[in-house]
Length: 144
Figure: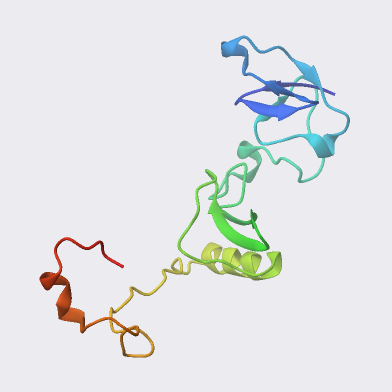
């Protein structure tokens, strides 16, 4: 199945460049390997692996507005169609992140981590430290 790269990507053990950067068409093993950065040449993808933008005719594009992504270390985040992280949500598994993505698709606002109030959950200071106002008295010391 012949494709061209529309963005720089990695397939078949090497980096594939777009045609305007000197890249050439290449073959993929199966339709399942068709990436967002690839464009089919002489064939159309079957099913929903890469829907055409003109076929949707509505609000949707070639990818969902939000989707779950593994972020490493067992964490999952929500990304938008351009691949950027949305909000501060971090889930322990893909199901949690996909539930958050579905909530955002339905019109919900992105989760934003509450600002640290400075008082702390325990309400005290660490042993050996002064009160919260003592920073002014120690200008030569780094902040903790």
